Length: 359
Image 1: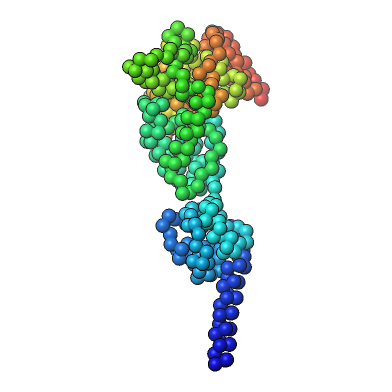
Image 2: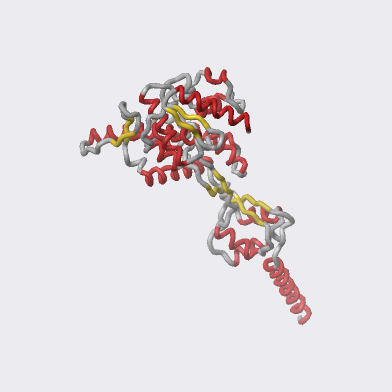
């Protein structure tokens, strides 16, 4: 009897020792281990995934500890393991939902094509999937821009932190939410504006208490938001110098008021991006490209934004400088020269070409 007791005692002690070793001893992954735990995974499936990735020693020990210490559920998500950890630490992480975060940087002026590539580069999914959402899920901005052909212009430039459990729609919605927040801060979402036929610059419409008038104001506001965002996207593409943006905006508003073609190169580029024909540089033949985005061929604003403007460009489009300029050209030093007449402009163009040859 004593021998049997000692035998079973040894088994119990050995099992307890093994269990303590399996649970408490940290495991160092051979390399950075990324484990994707999908919604609905059982504890057994989670343990299997972790064991396959070299994160835990034993699946049964993981399951038993989970049974003994059953608390909050283990959260789905993408987890990165690179430091030594034991089963207790790992289950704490899974209960917290300490998932791996992918950082996506969207600079000012990025187009939906640029953002799609950044999403893919961050490991969040194919660029084509995000592009499909950006070109189709316009209900996200239907109240702001009911005629918008895509989400272009309303995906606010910022640094975002996404997880692989988020859908492409979730990511696009986060960027739209940021646009709405910034628009409210600068008064874009609250201040309906119309383009004055006389000055070509935005003016604030009066507020009325009439329900029908309020409805008209809301429609007018939406239309004007589209125009302002479209103008801001062109301004954003034309200059990176914040203090120049109100002047650039004034040039385009002046040309709109006089029914002069905007002649904005970035809009032509965008039209070719949509058509899939952009070669990486503009040539003389491109100015004859038949697209509503070709502001050399068609008078007025393009059908929608040509990129996603930042706060400075939006403010410039809302509050352009008062000027009588109709032309501008780069000065080869990162700024622009503005002119009132085509003669002045041609001189500035010649000066720019001389400076570029000298460089």
